[in-house]
Image (cartoon, rainbow, N blue to C red; front, side):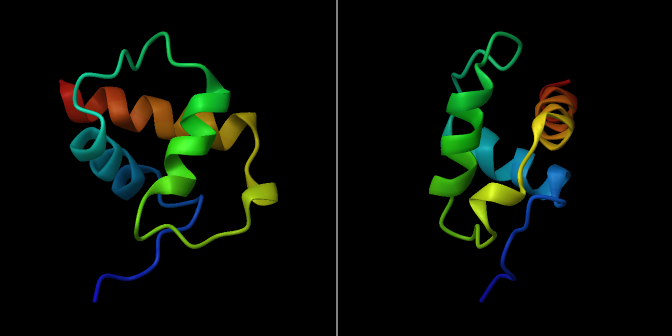
Length: 68
């Protein structure tokens, strides 16, 4: 069983998001959508309130790195 993802696991979350949403426009993605998509990941298990703009930006940048 994979370990549970937390907000601080930006790279692992980015990989999972790329698999779940391969056609997403990552550059223009709204943080509200990103926040929701992270929580919808099957291995995600963290408090939704522990997220913030800095964390979401880190996930977004990691996701862009996964694409390049």
